[in-house]
Image (cartoon, rainbow, N blue to C red; front, side, top):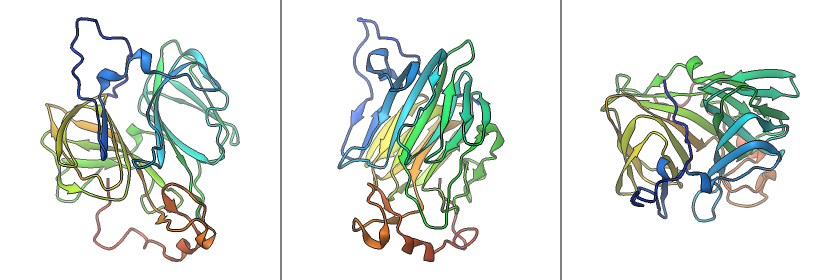
Length: 306
């Protein structure tokens, strides 16, 4: 398995500026060719680090999450990467080695490429590049929406440790690696890896409430986004608002794989304070939700989503 990592740099003056970058009312495509040195940002509390911030809450578009591509040079890192106590996160390493320390548990983990960590809201953690090469990772952040009777806890795993689950009727052409149980209501976001074999597809236009951040890890494909056909390849980032119709075909000789964020498992919030829930940009997490548990194993006969 391979995981695309941006290298930065700057195009030569002789190159054409034409690219696939586009921002629409329903979706945004940030192709790998625009992830250059001059559009990076430093991050407070980090040393020897730069980042590409590819998604942030924008009113009228997608509002539930942010996503960053973070690159840390040897000797760099952060003692307190997450400075908002109510924010959860997922770190997915694409190159190098990242040392992650969970302070409360006293656990120290070295994540290689494909390493995955869920970091619960309120967790105190630190990261460092203790190796000799650059390390790069995807960092997805979301304001956690608490739910009475359910508590999300931090964990560390990897792509290699999670077996992809094939979608029904696809003979494995479309599969998803799920890092948390979809029926676990403690989790209000999923960050999964979706894999298509050559010729595999999403055979209908998914149109749903979940927002998406999609980073293409490997291969290439063609996406149908709100009526437009868009070619994508490893290193591209797609950012989709709620209810953007979406489908895709895998292309090329190898697998088409991407890291997928979506917000899940919360009731839609209609008023600011109903039921004691907190006002967030996405779903409502008041106590009344706990009365309507999803049946164990999901709804009968219903396939799990990506």
